[in-house]
Image (cartoon, rainbow, N blue to C red):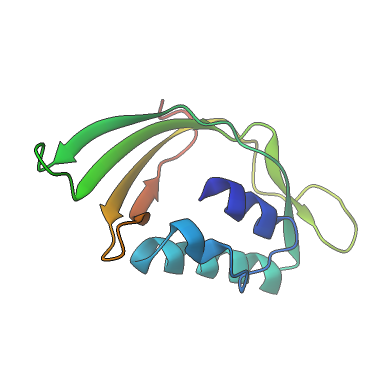
Length: 124
C-alpha cells in the first residue's frame, strides 16, 4: 500500500487506481483525500519513507480475518515540495512516527488495509 501511495504522491494523483490494490474503506479514503489536498495546495512528495512493520495481533488466531500491524516509519527522506517551484513545503521535517493499521481479509481472499493512523514525529 505504501509503495503505491509513494508513487501517487509524486504527482499528488488522488485518482490513481493503484491506491485500491491494497487499501479499502477508510484507509483508501484517507489516502485519496490526503493526495487531493496536496494536489489542491500545489504540493507533491519526493522520497520514500522506510518501514519496520510487525504484526501486533491476529483475530481469530485459528483462522485469521483481521491483523493489526504496528510500524515505526521514518519519513526523514520523504517530504513535501511545491509542485511549481520544487522548493520544500513548510510542513516541518520528517522523522520516526508510529503507524497502526488494520488489515482485513476480503471476500475474494485478498488482504487489504481497511484503516490506519499515523502518529506525530517522535512517537517511535
